Length: 287
Ligand SMILES: Nc1ncnc2c1ncn2[C@@H]1O[C@H](COP(=O)(O)OP(=O)(O)OP(=O)(O)O)[C@@H](O)[C@H]1O
Ligand SMILES: [Mg+2]
Image: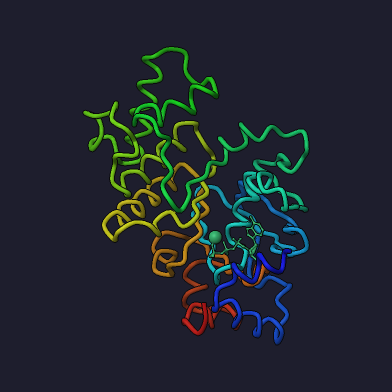
């Protein structure tokens, strides 16, 4: 059954990657996995979907106030790894996660952890903007309300405004807060989703290909926003665009068939990669 799911999900680029993996073992990560100032520390993470070993012994720190880009061919495990960071794999019945992941020193893998506040602390922005079928105001107010973050309507109004301001959307929507969020343009919807994530005071923001459905102008706005948000938040972003990774991140992690092959400063990964698989990928030889 797993084989059937996999075969239909794997794209041609991945088949090529399979050949390479037979030639070269990639179990030891090249480069510095640690951060001098870590916010999240992942050690020996393994993820299986039934028998499919999708993440293999991955260890990586995510530093404070950094943007770390996750790159690699389709199916290499980027989204799976990202979902480990806020226990989103719990929502996939076939998924099993092992290893240690701490957030500010606290183990998030513990069974007793309440994932609702965890997912506020480690928020997620998806590939396709997914506003709730509610007004712009309600899209932002919903999270603070369920987490009990404000005491009055005035406080909630203020939080809605500051969240929209931080996401660079306030000026465009301040006169139509009661209009449906789904009526905004794609780029505006994505900023609405970022504002929604910011409204519950996250420490870490996970972004899985946040610009892949956007045009270059909307992409540039989101990229500028990511750079600004870095001052206050830790950001892990999955992207298929090497240009985007180079523009927005300070560190880059290259995944291949479930292995974390190489991690380093974004400059080093793109200008002097140490592993042949990384070099092949960034020079466009596959993927
Ligand atoms: N919900 C799921 N159920 C079963 N297997 C899954 C599921 N999600 C991912 N996988 C499998 O796990 C492996 C890694 O997939 P993942 O989606 O993490 O890759 P990715 O690097 O994000 O790919 P892409 O660039 O295409 O988004 C693949 O073999 C995939 O088929
Ligand atoms: Mg993915």
